Length: 85
Image 1 (cartoon, rainbow, N blue to C red):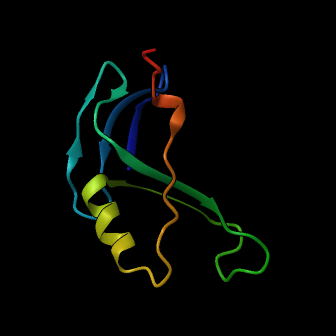
Image 2: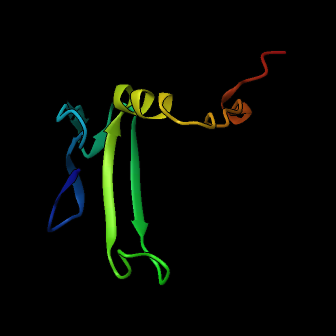
Image 3: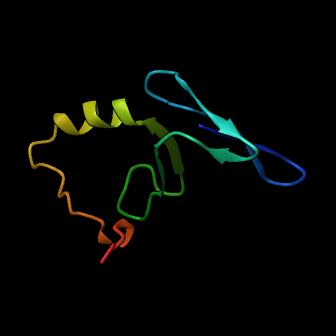
């Protein structure tokens, strides 16, 4: 769950909703990886009209996806790689 400074919308804190771990935030920047989910439920859901949001630390995300029947599709993000030649 994310906490913001109301006046400037500066990120103050991020806490994993699953394990309660407080992630490192400095100067409004998250310094650890986290999965942020925000989902507005629609017409065909029993939760129609609700918006659910949560954050998971990297460890909790790994635990979560390890129970999936169909594995998560993982691709290499080549935009981060630098060609040194």
